[in-house]
Length: 406
Image (cartoon, rainbow, N blue to C red; front, side, top):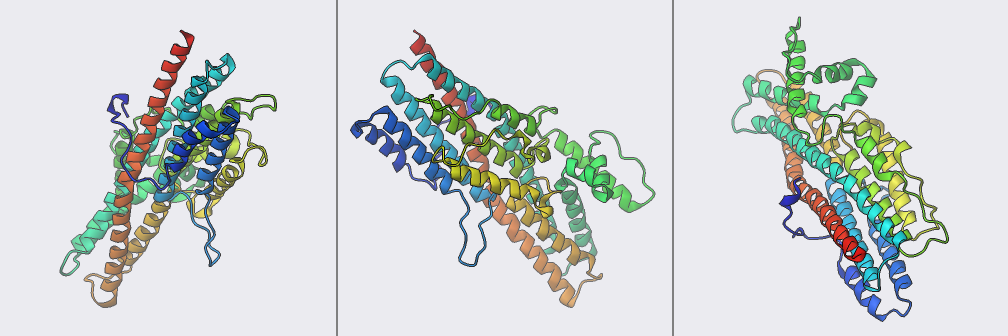
C-alpha cells in the first residue's frame, strides 16, 4: 500500500458513533479537572468500543462467532476511532503546553510500534485478495453446475478441477506438513514455484502435483511483504516492551499503553483471520505481551475477553489445518466439500435425485460465494484505511515533535 495512495478518510458507514469523539472535545471545555478527566474519559471510551466487540450470548445459549468479515470490519472501525481519540488527547495535551520529554518519548514509541503494523496491513490485504481467489474458484465450480439444461460429464470434470485447485490452496502449509498424510503431501508439493512437476504413475497423482505446483507459483508472487517475513515475528515486534505503566507514571502513560494493547490485538486478529506468511505460529500465545490486570484499567476486561476468544478459535480442531480463521473461509470449505461429495456420488449421466442433490449443493456454494464477494471488498478498503491512518498519524507526530523541539 503506497503511502502516496492516501486520499483521506473512508466514506463507508461506521457501526460506531462519532458522538463520543465530539463529546470528548466538548467535555474538555467544561470539565474542571482538565487533563486528568480527559484521560479518564478516553479510557472509558476505549472500554465501550471494545465491549461492543465482545460476542453476545443469544437467547438460545449460542455465542456469536468472532472473526467473521463483519466482526473484523467492526474491529478495524473501533481501532480507527480509538486512534482518532488518542490523537485528540495528545493534541489537547500539547495545546496546554509543551509535553515533558518523557511524554514525548512515550508518544514516539507508540508511533514506532504502529509503523510496525503497516506490514501487517499489507499482508492482511494480500490475504483478503487470496480469499477472493478462493471465492472465484468456488464460484467456477458452482456456476458450471447451475447452467440451464442437463449436467454433462464435461461440466462435472470442470467443477472437479476447480474444487481440486481450491482444496490445495485451502490447506495451511505449516499445519499440513506437521499432520502428515495427504495434507503433508500437498504442502510439500505446493512449495514448487517454477519447476515442472515430476511424472506420476497415476493420473490422479499427476493432477494433484500439477495443481499444487501451479498454486505455489500463484502464491509466491502474491505477497507484497518479503518471502522471509513472518506474521509471528512481526507480532512479537509490535508487542515488544509493551508493559503496564507503574503507579507513579501519570499523564499519557496509560493512554499510550492502552493504544499499544489495542494495536497489538487488532494486528493479531488480522493475521490469524486471513492467509498470511507464518500465520499458524501467530496463533500461539507466546508472542502476547504481559496482559494487564482486569481491574487496573476500564478497557482491560473486554480486551482480555477478546484475547481469550481468539485463543479459543485457534485451538478448534476443525480450523487447525485451515489457511485462515475467518468464518467465511470455514463456511466456504464446508460448502465446497458438500458439493464435492455430491459430485463423487453422482452417476453419469445425472438424473433424478442425484441431479437435484448436485444442483442444491451448487446453489448453496454459489450463495456463499455471493456473500463473500459482498463482504471482502469493503474489508479490503478498511484495511487500507487503517494503513493510511497510521501513516498520517505518524507524519503528524513527527511534525508536532519537531515543532515542540523548536
